[in-house]
Length: 213
Length: 213
DNA sequence: TCCTACCGACCTACTGGTAGGTAGGGAGAA
DNA sequence: TTCTCCCTACCTACCAGTAGGTCGGTAGGA
Image (cartoon, rainbow over all chains, first blue to last red; front, top):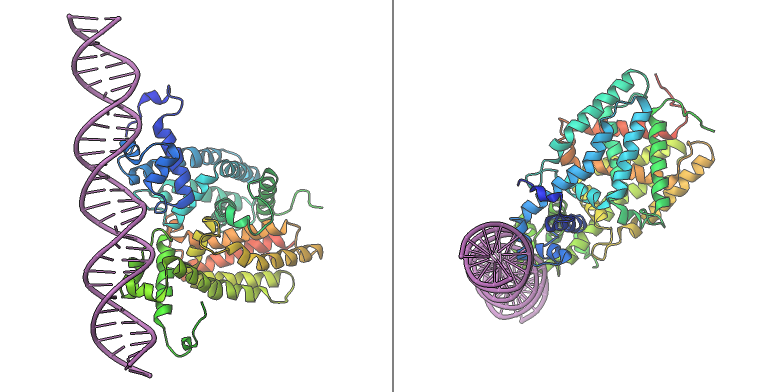
């Protein structure tokens, strides 16, 4: 439970290696589709050794999710905690969120799996964890719309739309790769996707495009 | 493989009942998270009886997916096969797709699961099945943009965005229900969501809103 | 008399988890 | 220094439970 302070000294503790391997396996195959043997094999140890570090599969999954919330959702929350106004603020959060997603595709996939399973899978209440960020985003959007800086939309609908548009291109990447003749994870593809999302959202939100041809 | 003609006579053949139950179970728990016992219990028979109708779990899953493609993707393809022009055509497809999703939330969830798993899970190549529709949609969008009826966007990026925005609100419904204080499946909620998607897409695509206040 | 639909009993493989044991490193005492 | 003690990390062997799938048999309608 309590993290020992030797985390600072050890370069990569076995626990961390296990969590990283488990995150990848769970993202790949889901909770039910991943056996403790799979994870142990990825680490290079036997299952009982793995269970020496984590009391149960469920507990391991919980820690994996803590990791996701801290090093994936965290940076996005930080960016969202800014104080900017208007489109610039949205843009900053969008770019940050996109970069975090691009840097951690496994995180996105597992997050998505959890969302599909209801977000309250195993002692995890994803919605409750994300709700503060969601609510403040709604408040921000409403304020900006009232101030006339954004076109009027339903703020929470808008967020759901953005959420879906952003996450889907990462969580469904292997599928989408079969629709377009390109690796969605390639730099050029990512760059194009980000620019599209920014331009698309800006067009929908801001009254007049600043420099449309 | 070949559907027997007695489908026409029987009001609901055991096969169909099994497929329907399996679709629900798979949507709920995923392929790995669903046992044949679960499905058999939902139907009201024993596992061996179920395996009398389908040779294996994998074959059953395949037939479930055929069902999804035929009675879920099919109607959307039909709507997309129209000959309209400009926003009206997009709108028609969007509304149809939305209604199909709303009427078959299990289908959406299972489709989403499959997309996350890569779309080529068990002899199913989802991307290949959807690709013709996708390609013709890209061609349509490109044509309309070239004709100046839509703002310029990358057509395939636009489709991915729309795909994500539309499907996510259904596939992640149980999670999103925890973000907003409302059942996303309620009629009023669905209506608002659809109107938002239409308005949002129209704003982004069409140069000037036809009747903005 | 078949044939279809169904069932109980059984099989093997694998699941999460436990029991018990061992190698090795550090601390302390002689 | 060396012997002992203990603790951590890991192992093999095993457990009960459940997975998908097979076998042999039966009830009942055509």
